[in-house]
Amino acid sequence: QSTIQNTNPSYPTFHPVVAMPSTISDTKTKDDVFVSLALVGVGLAIGSILATARHKAKKYKVPKVWKESSTGKSAFSSTNRPTAGATFERSLPRGKHALQLYSLGTPNGVKVTSLLEELILVYGTDAIEYDAFFISIYKGDQFSSGFVKANPNSKIPVLLHYEDMKNTMDDESSPQKVTRIFETSAIMLYICETFDTKNIFLPPVGDPLRAECLSWLMFTHGSAPYLGGGFGHFYTYAEEKIPYAIDRYSMETKRQLDVLDKHLSGAGGPYLCGEKLTIADFACWPWYGNLVLGRLYGNSGEFLQVEDYLHVMVWAKRLDARQGVRRGRKVNRSWGETNMKLLERHSVRDLERLEEEEEEEEEEQNQEVE
Image 1 (cartoon, one colour):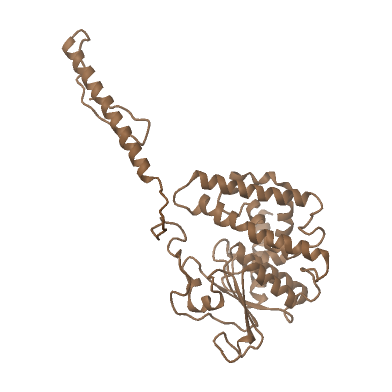
Image 2: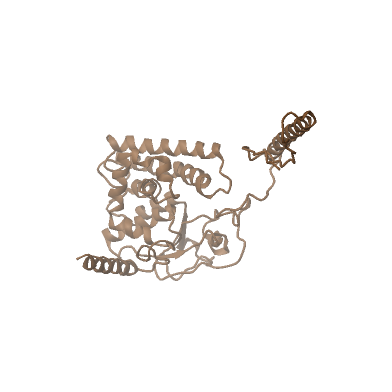
């Protein structure tokens, strides 16, 4: 027996039975061989036709009207749906502070927690303090009735500000006492306008720098979805790796990194608004800073050659070294090293304990080395 090896996985592999002659002078045997090989050729041709037909059958044809169907298995396939609103009844938990944050330690969550922690370091906990509750977007916590009431778009993070601690979201008699804010840029602006009384991180109205700050804040708000929902999804989460989609969003992500790199190399550095650190930096860093530092989407840093963006790298490391940013990364985080995750936060003391534990571990490691 002999096997016709197939180098194209789309074609079937054939195993014809061919009686090989003991001597090539046997005319009848030679004829049998030629017939057998001819049949094999026909079989391969048929296999090629069938493979082509299967390929064409898999090719997506856009229907006149879209209908929901299975989109494969991914981290979010069980929660994705084409409708809004709550899927189950559950109220949001509530802590003791006026600010209640419901979030997850993803880049969008870190935007807000980094800003809050930086403000606490500047103004102290008597001026601003908050509770942060963990929302698992993988389990669908964002579709609870309480969360949807706070944010009808069912996205993290969402912030509730209780001006009167006696009121609740369900108190119809005085709903103005509870302010809800969703979308990260809106939350960050609200926090600064309410608590950053010295305009440390948000330039005042009338200052030309404010327009620059808002422009870069909205740059991130509009651009990051191409990085996360575009590149991150197709490069990491999508079950089927689609070259066109990966190429499309890789190109756009690299273009955005180049925008930042060129800006930071010129009049923009060392921060997005020149010499002044602003909420634009806190909004941009969790996405683009973590990307170039190798913390997003597995080996994406090598894939995108992020080391080429030298000025973005310097800026990312500068932000990464800040205590407030480092603290913000830990809040509502359920993965990673023990001293880098805090599922829920109810006071600054929660983070101080993690820092103390981290220092103790470093001391022990240094003693072992000595």
